[in-house]
Amino acid sequence: QVQLVESGGGLVQAGGTLRLSCVASGRSFSINNMGWYRQAPGKEREWVAASTRGGDTMYADSVKGRFTISRDNAKNAVSLQMDNLKPEDTAVYYCYSDGYQRDWGKGSLVTVSS
Image (cartoon, rainbow, N blue to C red; front, side, top):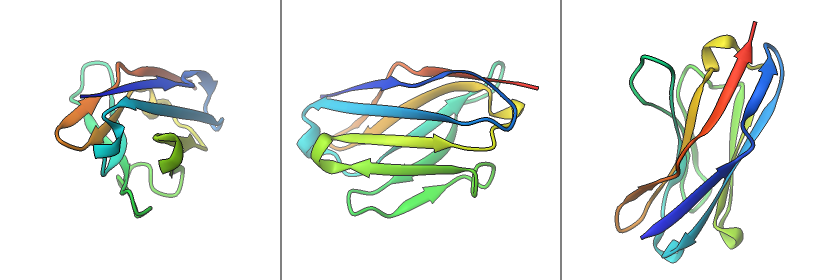
């Protein structure tokens, strides 16, 4: 099993910037893809972005051009740089990893005020 710990959430005004980080431990050698989902109040969890071990990146249309995912395989870490944040980005953000199974972090709250 892989353990994932997120950090970096908080409160920011619309147009602002936040950076989320996630570090994996445990059977991290098994990890291929890492990425982020988010869940807004009253809504289903939605996929945000992902990075393959080789560095390919993918984004949901709603965040493309504003969010940047980056991966550090040596540190078993993934980050999400969030620029030009909007109130609709308010959500709990969950880091995930895909290896022998999908593992999840506990989530980090991002609140964007208008």
